[in-house]
Length: 411
Image (cartoon, rainbow, N blue to C red; front, side):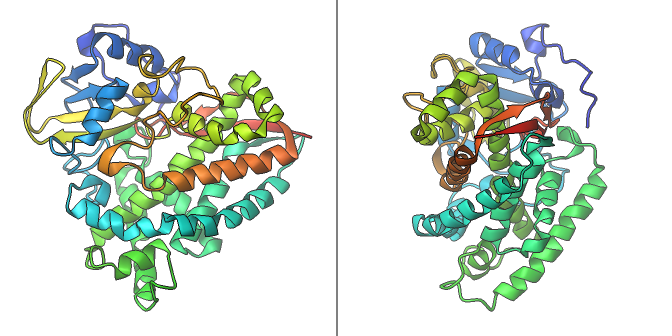
């Protein structure tokens, strides 16, 4: 992990601002600089960074416009600012344009179809209850390890039908996928590649097994991909790319929202009071958690054509970064955006799931996990008290929390 004491200073000239620095997110120091960009340069060009030159889009409605315009802003080549042509190449459908994107995405959406979500809800509730019932009351522990990671990893194992007793591998592979040295990780890229190739090896064994399974009877992600015409002929690296996409999408986003919700209710204790007084606020609290946390800070596009945008000329081939974390704090689109408020009038008005053809396919599953977990929390505990500073992940892509020390207070 990068040295957190190396404070980031963005008080210089507007032209010198580089918001891709992972330390800015690890130190939770993004607010002032993103506000400055929203106010003074909502379409901002950074000519030099660790990832080359790029444009930053920081206002809510501008981000939405870029996200929905896949004709001018392509997803080819990856969706993180850290993707480079010399990086580990594992293409996936979120980094594709239509028609291939649409065909591959459709191949796996069945796992989150309404009928399957209805079947998953009692499974989630049972597992959440089991996790919560074994937590120590009145003792300090790391909420991230004990709850956030455990619940999301169990769900990942379920939707992949991955060997349950080996589910910790899924968490490890998710962390590997989002922790390149370029984006703030410390593991050498050679070791990272080795770990991800091990992921491919184990999932290839499962693929070969699932070829003999009937997709009418099995709705796990591997079986769906193995039998769908759009995905059954993928080469190994494309299979790995889609695995990484689905693992990260099902892990990092939900687990960091679980942790972020606990943190938000502690920073704004009056909201915890509201929740205890009226548990029916849970459905509106869940999208507010996801907005306030914004588990993925950005998505990247490449300009397919020269585009005039707010008086700036974005050239064909330029890298364009939509900073969801900034858009979710845009005062022109959201009232008091810095405040965590569980009874907002329109809580789904946020950018965390994206827009257009790349809108997160697992959004309803993520919301259901959070809803069920908080329903079970409120039946057991009066308060989850944060007893120390959160330790944040050094990443400009995943807005992650590695440690959140808490103490439970029984009802």
